Length: 126
Image (tube, rainbow, N blue to C red):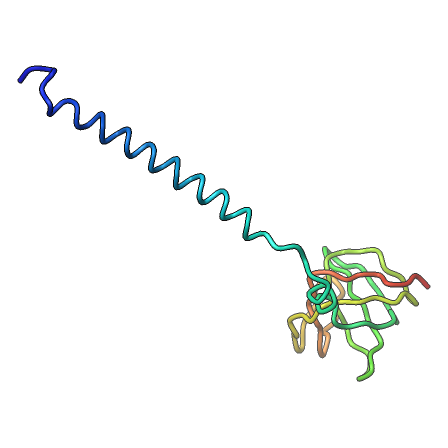
C-alpha cells in the first residue's frame, strides 16, 4: 500500500472528529456544572442550626469539646470538634447522631445520651 492511500487518511479524520467531540463535551460539562451551583437559601440556613440552648457545662478532651446544653426537654450533652465555648453562652447546633451509653475514655466517664454534631455556633457570649 502507498502512504497516500485513503486508508491512511481515515484515522487522521477520525482523530480530528474525536478531538472535536471531546472538547465539545468538556465545554458542555463545564457550563452545565457552573449552572448547577445554587446559592445557599435562607430556608436552608435556618434549618442548619435547628436547635438552640444555653451552655451549662463544657469540657475539652482529646479532639472533642463536650457541652451540656439546656433545652425545653431538659439538659442534653453534645460532642463537637474542639471549639471555644464557655458556660453561659447561648449556642445553636444542628441535629446530630444520638449515641446512648457513650464511653469517653479520655474523660473516664460514660454519657447516658450524647449527641454528636459536626459544628456549633455561638449565638451570644455570656
